[in-house]
Length: 552
Image 1 (cartoon, helix red, strand yellow):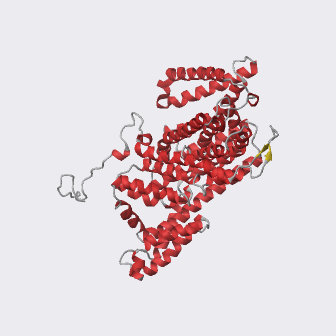
Image 2 (tube, one colour):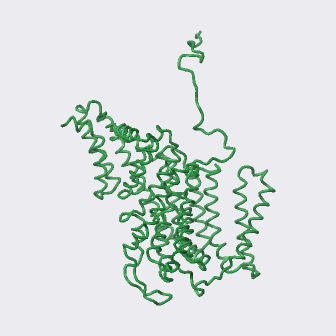
Image 3 (cartoon, helix red, strand yellow):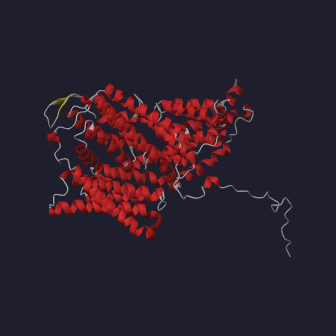
């Protein structure tokens, strides 16, 4: 019996690890305690394992080096930088301004508020990178407005929770940073690969809302005229955008030779600057070229869009590393908050403390995962996982199907950080052995792990929305009507259609890998395509012995 346990210690350890996590103890400490407990068990059972266990007490001396490797990893510095950037923008009222402005832009359209939530969710995803911040902000601001004007509670809840989860896949997502680190790939490449799938998923959300609005118009009525306080302004906004775009194109044509490969970045920057100048001149001189809504759209939309473009654009074109881009984004968010006159010591203190908590959470989970992996590799758990997954029928296709089902089921109980630190390191070697591109594999896993936020009843986005949605009837401050609360069942039912869309997105990513693996023209030789053909040691390359020159 002891021999049987010793020879199967790896699967036993994996099952007990899942049980540990389901008990609800803090993940980082559960992983570390579980790893140390099985280290002791493994050392005691090593003589009975028949070489299935390679643990010994001196192996514990490797832990300090593993911890130092985590603490000295500069890539992980991007996590606090992007977190601080998003929290500063969220705390300074950017989300509220965006929802109000874009909601009025889409006001005359059925489902307009839902479209606004999706658009703002995508924009917040590109500025915050934090799901909790996006869901809470939109839940506090947009849910009361949607209920005020007769939106269906299930659709309202579902679109808010789902749009908040876009922060999981649209760069600069924190989980993409972690996945890149765990897969040993560039964060910039991971961002570049995830951009198109994130936009496609956003389009799927919008298509669902448009279809539902056509089939059942009463579920998502248009805003009444009295609620559109800033007017329409669509024509004047289009005029301003055309003028700015023309100026940007002229700048591109005139100076592209001097600024070379990065001309697109400067072109967009010039267009954004011209838009702001047009709006400011129109406001100061009272020319009437732009309506109040058009000016509001420019002042509210252009600064965060410019910040996102500069941060991600500099990373994509190679001007900055993700860590440098995150630092630039945090500095830009701080400057924008000061410019808006909304930065106070309390806001800055709250943002810094939240950033420190999240960063410490990530680092402690990573440290606990390293303790777990030291023991798991010592009992040859990686060999067990590799044999288990490579023996699946169907080869690469069978592996992808099994892995996605496994991650989808584990997402019911584990959040994306836990999945990234525990499961991904076990899957990556098998994927690489099967010839699967790890950037594509990482983006696929990120989309799948996104479902962890919408799984009823454990989805974190559902919990975030539940924490800010009304639990009791309340009197609306505008219409003075009593508004009924949102129930748990309505939140769960509203999330299911968007959960299905996320599963559809997983299938689209598998069916069309070019969405992730697109390559810009003129990129030249890819590092993965380079073959090093070196002569064997001790020869001169012509299979003749090589003798060093004699020394005098």
